[in-house]
Image 1 (cartoon, rainbow, N blue to C red):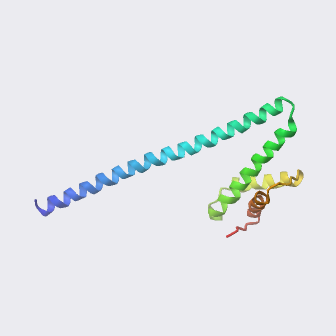
Image 2 (image 1 turned 180 degrees about the vertical axis):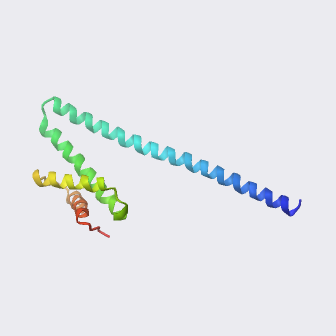
Image 3 (image 1 turned 90 degrees about the vertical axis):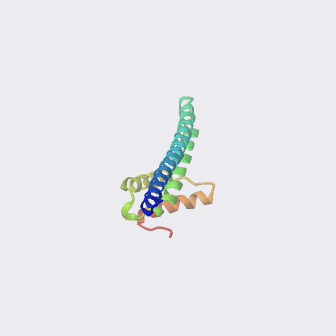
Length: 134
């Protein structure tokens, strides 16, 4: 086999390997993100049904409490993930959501039974000052 043929064979193997590897990563990533999204949507739907049932039964106190817990969870998540994104690349909508939640909590204060959750929410609100915990 000549050097040219060997080089072309190696090049073909490299191209086939790159295409196959790219395809495999694409399939894995697609499946991973799909499972993550559908799991999140299922949890959201389940919580929403629970809240709606409480509201329709006239149990607004427990419905409000479930919504407060959902808000806590969202703030904890935003406070954990947003500092990892450089300020210049952060979606302004995310900061607006945190500001709206902070204003809501100023109007309707809530004490949290968990000091860790209270601290995580405070960290989310600190993002409004342009500070991160790094």
